[in-house]
Image (cartoon, rainbow, N blue to C red; front, side):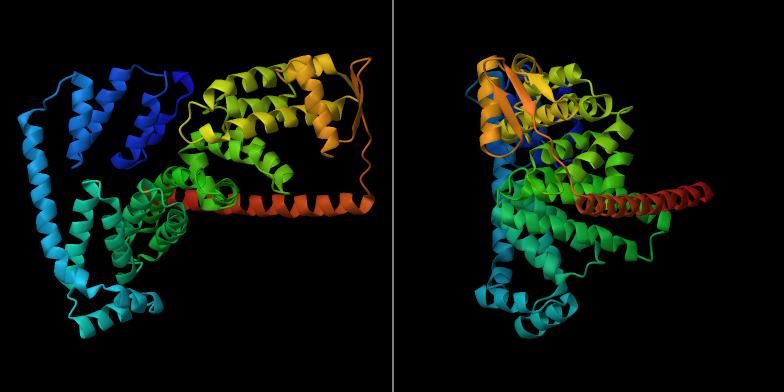
Length: 444
């Protein structure tokens, strides 16, 4: 299903090191030719200093035991550079001992911390540049843990208005993703978000340029965050909040990256949050708005179900999702939950329209055989997820009537009204910022 594969689209917004895991995943799938994946991986790795990995990929692609002389030379040059950096960083490593790191945790002000290190340990400003260069060398060579340690220190030593702070935040997040340290990576996502937001305080950059710069940075952050949200234990719920409830991020999705609606839609469908009904309504509205420029089986499933009430169309799209989701690097772990919740959403919507439904008809709509469909419905009733009765002899499901008290209706409408008003205000603010940025750019 190369038609629905987003790897190429998403890779445009990723660091080359982050693209490697995506290509590794595709190599075990049958979406593309194996040699084309290896060739892409080799081209990517040639731009890094991960020479051993590059040599291995070269051998696999060309089916040889030896590699070109240039790769052998590059490997030696890389090892020499790492050795030089390790020697250069030895005095700095002594400064940042365990005791020093404890002091750094206690001191939150970058300028004050820098002055303390300078007075107490003789730390010099040029050492900070050396640390930055060392972090770059180690990261490019695939030594992500070492790079991450230096970047964490740099991030704490420079103020949020210093461009090195933003660069350190990006490098630290990438390194933590690549070593699969998801708790730290989740914290780094928040720190990077704050660092991007702080760019608006930069008086040297015109407002239009600031706005466009932040838009580009947030677009990249949304893509990088997929690694974290789909691997962290609480990630899917946090993705909904990060994408849907942050007006800046929502604006970035609608402006530049509507394909990210795929991931937001999946997270909402599999969510167990009590706000799921409102979240679904909001996501369906977004999908409907952006359907002119982006569609896939996941977004079309929700559009068919909640906008068109086309159950046959929803059934067809859910069937295609059986192939699309396992082939998506980020979504493969959501397959079972999505299919189960997708069937449940179809069933709930169908039964909201009909008081009595044939089990055979339901089985067809849910892409299940009759026996499995009946067992599935029995389990729903047993787990108190629905009010219904089954007549097995007639093969019918009778839906119970659910009466909502006037008080509960008022509460729900008030909550929905407040939610809608809040979203409308956010959109008006975004529209105003867009207009100001456009006018400033036009005048320039």
